[in-house]
Image (tube, rainbow, N blue to C red; front, side, top):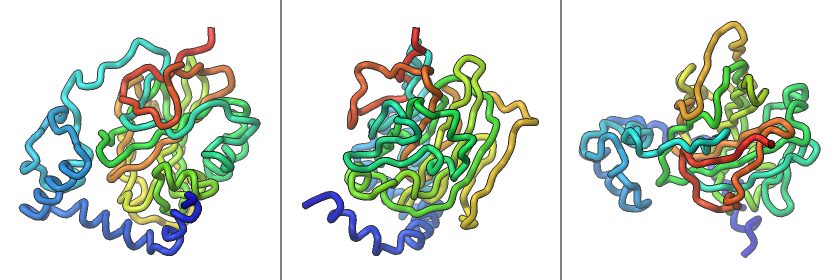
Length: 283
């Protein structure tokens, strides 16, 4: 069965209603019911609780508290590299931006302007640049960290659909990552220039959250919203937490031309861990 046929039911699902319901369930403090849900989830997806600061399943008041659990200090050492991997997960795709086009899967591309909510001037910074699209599965650690030092300049909320972002859906739905709801975070680096981290929502992703704003999309206003931080000094260092998903999803990063040479060990579908070498500057 082709991937396009496999994803057809997603067009019919009440994705918004399912996501709202999942958000309520994940945020509920249901006592024994919550503990049983977490225990089922850990067993179903093979979550490694030994890495968590708090491995006691019964102590989490809500599913969200469990899902965004911090890791023990030293669980993810940072590589001595110009760019580190910002998440645990798997590589969806990565490589060169061809003119303004990002490769999604065989037969599917989307533009940088579409990804960032239609801002052509922002997208122009990344013409012929590089991208990395990283997928966080349910079992993964769901806090997001900085791949390099950066000063926050803008944040853009872009409304959209809530399709799944798993590999089958990426192969089956054209322009998936520029169609789904997303939060575009724009940074400036003294060493690397401007770069973008885009948090992409999905079915049952209750919300996306950043360390400087909190939950970005609780009300889903249905229109593009933007925040400017040019007059603030919000600086995050390589490896610092920058956000989290309340239920899992994908991030898409954009870098300027001649900014990053990706880790030669990287390949689509390869598992990745926070802190490993993502790339280095061209020499």
